Image 1 (cartoon, rainbow, N blue to C red):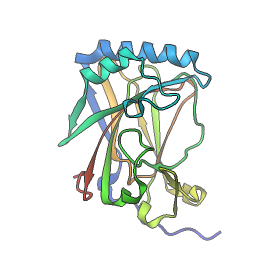
Image 2: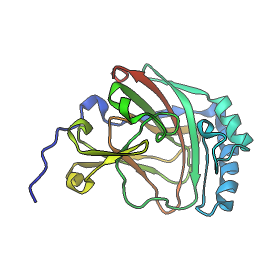
Image 3: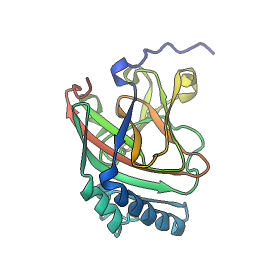
Image 4: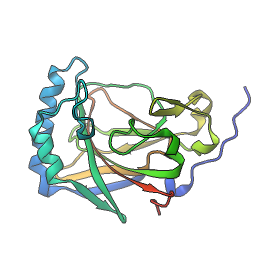
Length: 220
């Protein structure tokens, strides 16, 4: 099989590590984790999330007061000149995915409910935080320019059409667990970087913040 020629990502688009001190909301993080853990125990997939943008949809839980309190206590996070707004919390007790499914986020609110036709006309800026004090979170991504790559849209989900041909361009960014009130994360343009989050055996506890800009000028 001939090797596929692809352009690499612009350096400004590579996921960048973030470190935050969230001492002011330490108790709120613990309460939200406990609440989601109880929800995950009762869930057949051992996973529970708080997605305000999906309120009212079938199967979406809204009776999560501790998660709501988290969103109210930390509604936005300023970082590197960007103000990221709260999008969602999710906790899993088990590994949900063992293999990367490289995709582009179509919006900030949920990652998978945006307009794919306008994807190249805006930046979806993502701040992904690992709130777990026990396990790391791993982001796999492809060091390729998606505009020069074969993509396929399935509803509002955009993925690499032939990821096996791009495996040599796969990279890994590890987000360490929370240590005390120090929380680690990654910042990147999630509609311009083909990526996939993967769990360890003990799952994950993450928070996603984001914002959208037009014209592709959101990342310096």
